[in-house]
Structure formats: structure tokens, C-alpha cells
Amino acid sequence: MSQDQRQYEIVVFGATGYTGKYTAEHLTTYAPTDLKWAIAGRSEAKLKAVADEIHSLNPDRLAPGIEIAELNKQDLVKLAKTTKVLISTVGPYHKYGAFAFEACAENGTHYVDCTGEVPWVYDMVEKYDALAKKTGAIMIPQNGMESAPSDMMCWMLVNHIRQTLSVGTAEILDSVYSLKGAPSGGTLDTLLTLFDTYSLSHFAKSMNPWSLSAVAPPQETAGKPLLEKITGIRTDSDLGILTDSLQGPSDIVIVNRSWSLYDGGKFYGPKFKISIYTKVSSNLQAFLMHLALTLGTATLLLPPVRWLLKKFVYQPGQGPTKEQTTNDHCEWRAVANADVTDPNDPKRASGTMAYHGSMYALTAATLSEAAITLARDKTFAHELGGGVLTPATLGAPYMERLQKAGLKTEVKTMP
Image (cartoon, rainbow, N blue to C red; front, side, top):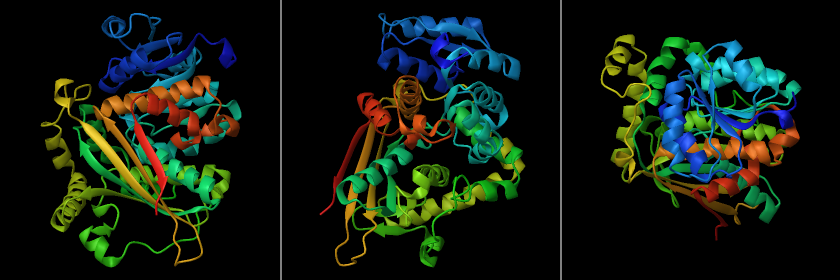
């Protein structure tokens, strides 16, 4: 069945979960009122309860369909065949995500999710990229808080430099400049179970910054200075004092895949490099955060520690209440250096992104607006014709939809 003949434009799989419900609420509030969509999961009663609850947010909207699907290939193939786009919010993805991914790749159904599990994404690229290209399925994992903002920030800056200077981009410094928010139980469960599933060797291979690049990476540039490796401290005249980013390694592999998908790296440029940090207020705070992330990661390698932590965190399906997220926000700031030859006349651009609200509301926005873009717009991703792609391949149509959904952005040439 061709996509135009399918019953729905979008199906949210996992709509009764924490992130899935946020996503259903976003579609109800922001999506075009003629959108044909459905919510899907294992419990009909819970799905009907979600449908009843979200109806009050926008009574003019077409009510979502209800689709029952268990976590098995047969049910998910049937579900994938009903829709143009499947949003999967059922995680941890390394435990529960493969059936939905495979079903969409096999049946030419576009797909988005909000995983940050790079080892799993690495496996999905290896197994299903070629199949998705054959069937025309556009598959975009890591399209939530990880890694849509960083990927779209880099695309925005690279595009600006191309348009204004007609050159490529060298290093981009991207920073989480301000953040207030708490993780859900699903996020914490993912973090605590990844090490149960994957070997250290698989982690090392998949977390290489260029592990997902579709072409050979650019010529190696100098790595971090030794002092930064030891202390975690980097200072930038525009961004201030920076240190390690918890989600930076996950975002970097997606940004580098975007580099490779845009004309084999030529659009971004042969000297492109992305560095992602967290903004802090002092060198001491930078060092302590670096130390905490380093020791924390090492500690998570120990099974007893992971077992103990599971007893004290939100359980899957749980998370902060709406009242607790009232003042949540995030702001990203970045500086991009143009690839110019005159060291006495450097050219740079700055970018900012800001969102006020729960980070899970932001993830709902990035998922939903990507799905609408896939269902209704024509983008560079559509020109590529299928495969495991990235948020940045949705380009300007996606950015415009995100802006209408509350993401504030600015890009400008720096003096």
C-alpha cells in the first residue's frame, strides 16, 4: 500500500507512557486540525483514557484513532502499514525499539524516535539503512532532546555561513548555556541498563565521533589540549567557561552523520568539527563537573551500583509533574568559525536556541513537528529518498515548524 492510501498520517506508539503522552498532547495542541492520526499501545483502556484527557486541549481536533499493538514484529508490521509516519516513544530502545524500527524500514514507513542510545542506533544503521533506502522509509532516531537541538543548531549555522560567505564551516562550539529540568524514569532506566546490554568494546566503537558517518571522515584536526583533558576546562571569549557535556558524545555522532549526508561533507566543509560543552560559572565548577561525569561513568560500569541506583530513581513511565516543570527551560548558544584562509580576518557566526517549559514538552515538539514535516512537507530528507537520516536533513521546513511550536532561534554574523 502506498503512503497516500494509508489510514493515518501519524501514529504515536507508546502514547500512554511519560514521553508518549506529552507527544499526544503536543499534536492535539499544535498540529493542523485536519491531521489524521492515532495513538497506539498495549492497553486499550489506557489509550482511551489518554484520548479523553487530551480532547479538552483542543475540542476542534479530529479525535485520534486507537490502535492496539504488542511489542512483537507481527503487531508492529500491521501498525506500520496503517500510517505514513510512526513516532516511537517506547524505550529503552535497546530493549524494546528494534521491532518498530524494523517494521518501518521494511514497509516504507517514515519513523522518528527520541532515543539517545548511540550503540543501539549504530546497530540500527548497520542492519536497516540499506533496507530503508530501498523501501523509501526515512528513519530519524535521536530526534528528541537528544539530539535535535544540537543537530539543528549546527545546520542553522552552517547554512548561514554558506549563504552569507559561500564557504564551509570549521569548528562549531555548541554549549548548553542554561538548563533547568529533571529526567524521567524512562531516561534513567535507559542510562542504568545500557551497560547491561552492550560490551565496552561496542561502546568504544559506536561512540567514536564518526561512527555513524556515511562517508570517510574529514582530515583529523588537533584533539583537545592535555590540560583540558585533565581538568575539563575550556574558555571561550564569547561563551565563557565551558566543561564536559553529558549528552555531548551522543549529539556529536548525529551531527557528524548530518555532515556526511549533505553532499558527502562538502556542504558543511572538509574542515568541519563540532565540540559540545556545558556553560558553567567558574573553573572550579568546571573541574568538579568534569570529575563527576568521569567518575560517575566509571561507577556505572559496576552492576551493584546500577542495581542500587534503580531503587532510588523514578520508575519507567514516571517523571516530574507538570507543576514541577513550570519553570523548566533550556538555552543553547553556539559560535561557528567559517573556513576562511586569512587568519587576520576571521569570520564567525553565532546561534542561539531557547525553550521555556519541560524538556519532555520540547522532546514532544521535536518528535511531533518532525513527523508532520515528514508527512506533509518536501525536504532534503525526501530528496535523499530514504535511509537512516538525521533531524538536520529536514532542514528549513522543520525549523519553521519548531519555531511556531515555541523554540526561539537566532543566527547572525559576528563582527
